[in-house]
Length: 201
Image 1 (tube, rainbow, N blue to C red):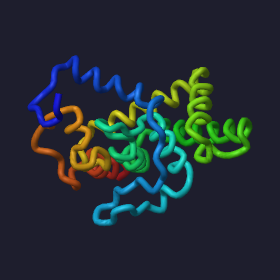
Image 2: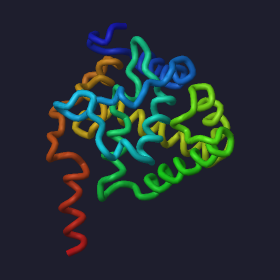
Image 3: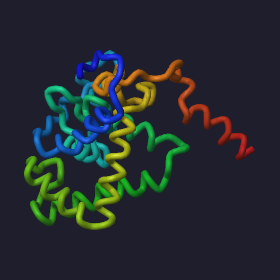
Image 4: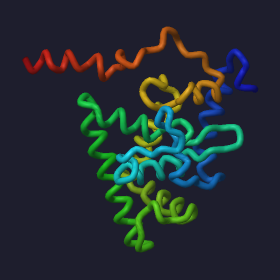
């Protein structure tokens, strides 16, 4: 079904979501230069993405959700921007942030032990084998599951939160979002700020 269709069935929607996992084993990753998310600055990469944990997280996301001819990848949906915006605001889930950041350290430690280089330096096959290995442990499985959850949020969330630029995920899924969409000053973490300050008063 073409993305311009007015809607899709629940079954088709679920089938398209199921493709996210299958694509991970079929497509090669793209380089960091693929990132292009700062408005008015094509190809620009923000400073925070040039260092860990975000650089490694971006590469893990790209491996979990690589682009395909008819489907957006993690960089296309600005998944790491959404993750950064979500975890780096004052009302973020601190446990999620700690777990995700610690997971980067564990992943790179394992990469150094097995290949004597960090995750971002590994080729696609090495990355796949490493992620499959950590998937076997409860902590590793939970870490990957959490990252996939944030990937799906980036795919489906309103673009105001940093992911799903120009509704690319909505278009791929032929989804019609609700209206009105939130303006930048009405995001959930901005609206939560006055409540947070009032509790401290």
